[in-house]
Image (cartoon, rainbow, N blue to C red; front, side, top):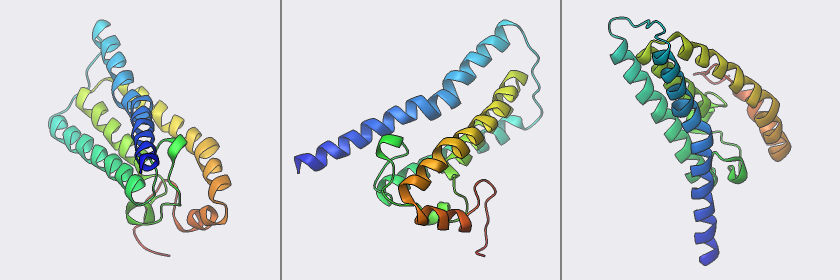
Length: 171
């Protein structure tokens, strides 16, 4: 019983650390620094009518996707998004049946909402950089690590489910 509680607490701590280092930095710390620079140097604002409503919908939708993915990893994958306590099996159901990296989609959609909300060119530059960073991370680190860990099961999953473009029909 104590061992199970300890494992659960480790997962909570690992998940929290991952959340702070990953999503919190991507979605808050770096954008706040960019907003500070944009305001300090009075860089132009590129807003448009209705941008606040669109951006809030995107930010809430992206956050919901990321949180949903995290909960799926905890309750069906028996792990967390953190590398140190990642899921024990390949996530194939729910949103993972449509796209391999829905949590990255959630972060990207949320960041797109932030870019639209603030309308700052430097944030748009950060968004483009984030797209490249996530591609490099997923292709060069995450997917090879998952392939080593899950082997044939991961290869079958990759053959069935696209990396970035959601597929809404079965093959």
